[in-house]
Each structure stands twice: as structure tokens, then as C-alpha cells.
Length: 222
Length: 235
Image (cartoon, rainbow over all chains, first blue to last red):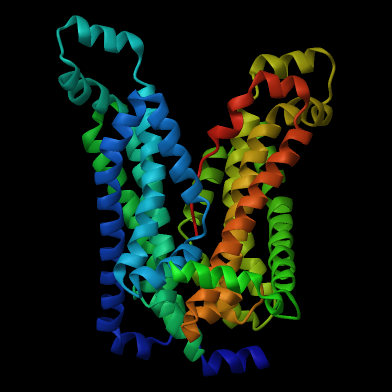
């Protein structure tokens, strides 16, 4: 039976390869985590002020959501490719598009979250004598947290997936295991790369959900 | 700025518009595999989302499964499918179908759930049978949100079909992947611009289809529905 023969020659998981390549796999995972962390951290650093400003200024909101919305429709591989002549095969080339995508997701959720703060709550805060900065930090932002966390979860899981593609521009990460296995026609690295990507995404998602439960205790589902 | 001049000259060169590696051929290949994948995904996802939304059962489960599905890297599915099934369109269609299903399930489920219960009851009261109620009352109301899901999926599929070139497939990804491999970044940039334009054109033409599908009264009723679509970038 050809199928059986096929499996005998190259099983989906070659445990021998796996056990001898653990440092290699961990390196790829580390690179993947680093790229994701940078893209998310810088994305948050840009989005928070931009989102807060955009929520208050209709013109800025239109401009920001329009610009990053257009950026968002550009395929990641196309963006990486377009940046290569300028930033070469460096981490910058990988990180710029990832940050741009995250800014759209995060800003949109910050705006939606702040928009959703009830008028009555704002009036009550004003009546209690909050200045506008204190009202923002102590009333509006906390109430917008659930929407912001929802955005963060989407941005993180989506970034982890797209980082696999950065392997095609020589960036390493778990995608490089997939690429390696494809080039060498060897199943194990492909399966390991894909499975670890999914696991990382699920762990990151659950981790953020756990932080959210602690940060937003009042919004806990019953 | 001579780089952009070179890219411009690449587009102006008639040789790039002919033959098996010409732009028209690559666009047709790209659209062909994208359309097939989107059609297969729609045939699976829309009935599931519509039925679950209509009955309002197992919705949480379906949405959780489809959210978990989003964590699957298309590049991984593509290469695993390639190693399992070999050369050809099948691995590409499998990977693209897998990524197109979640937004369509989620959106069609939410679209049907969001139909006003009073309207459902009114339909029942007017004597609509279950099937007629779904087809003539609930679906027309749900079209804007369902189409928003289809658009999200379609744009992602067109963007991701670029990866077919990694496993020796055709389409516009050929220019990008071959350009990176041979350091001909002008060709890579040309391919990138073509894919971006194709993704944009897909979104705009499906917006046109959406306008045709949504009954006029409903268009006036809930115009902003299409902007509520959940976005999720996979490639």
C-alpha cells in the first residue's frame, strides 16, 4: 500500500528529529515570541494616544481609520516585499506592517470602547468634579477596557499567524520551521511549526483573557 | 526614487503582459483559485451559520470553534496539505477554504441572531412556514451582515492566495516569491502592487454585489451594518 509505505518513510512526526532539534525549535519559538511582542507593544504605544485623540476629534477619526483601513487591506507578504528595497531583509521590514495592522484593530476598539461610555456616567463624573484628564483615566478608559481587551486579543492572535509568513523574507520564527520542512520535503518541522503556532496563539489568547478577568472584574461573565 | 521608476517601467514593458508568466495569466490563475476556495467555503459556512443562527443553538460552540480556527496559520495548512496531496490546486484550495470559513460562519450566525424577535413572531403570525420564514423574512434582513462576512473572507483569500507560489503554484505570488529568491525586487514590488490592487478591487466589487442583494427598504433601515463586521487579518 503506497500510503503505508509513505508513512513508513516519512511519518508526520519523526520523534528522533524532534528530540535532537529541541534547541533549534526553541530558537524559532523565541524569535516568534519576540517579533509578536514588539509588534503588539509598539502597536499599543501608538494606538492608545491615537485612539483617545481620534475618539474626540471627528476629522482625525476619519483620517486615522481611513488611512490604517486602507493599509489593512494590503496583503502582508506584499507589504513585506514592498519594504525590502528600503529596509532590506531586517526585522524592521517584518515589524512595520505588523504594527500598522495592529494599530487599525486597536484604535478601532479603543474608539468603540470610549464611544460606548454612557452619557449619564460622563455627566455624573463631571458633577463629582472630575477634571477632563482625571475623568479620562479614572472613568472613561476603565469602562472602555472590555472593548480594548477584545481588540488586543484579536490583534495578538492575528499577529502570531502573520509572523509565520515573515519566514519567507528570512525572519526566522516558527514559519522558518514550516519553510524548512517544505524546502527539504520533510514533514516533521512543518507539523511542529504549525502546531506550535496554534499553541502559542491559544496560550497568548487565554493569557490575555486571564489578565482581562483580573483587570476588569466588574465585566466578568456570570 | 529611481526604484519606483523601475517599477513603473516594469509595468510599461509589453513583455510582462504576455505569455504564461504574463500579468493577465497570473491574475486569472489568482482569481480562479480564490473564487473556487471562496465558493467551497461559502457552501460549507453559510448554511451552518444560517441554521445555527435561525435556531439559536450551539452558537457559542460554533463561534468558539471558528475563532480557534483563526489561530491556524494558513502557511502551515498550505505546506502540510502540499506534503499530503502533492502539487496542484488542491492544497491551495484547502488552505484558503479553511481561512475563509470562520468569518462567514460567525457573521451569518450573528446576522440571523440579530433579526428582531418581533419580526420573527410577526412572520409566524402571518402564517409563514419555517422555511419561508428563513428565506423570505430572516435572510433578506440578514444579508448586509452576511455579505460583510463574505467580503472579509474574500479579501483575505485573495491576499493569501499569494502564498500558492511558495508550493510552486501560480498566481500573482509568483512575482513576489521569484523576485525575493532572485533579488529582483522590482518584480517583487510589481507583484505586491498587483495583489494589493486585486484585494481592493475584490472588496469594491463585492460591495457592489451587496448593494444589489440588499432589498431597498432594508438598505435604508440599517445602512451601517456592513461597518460592524468583525475584522481579522490572517495574511
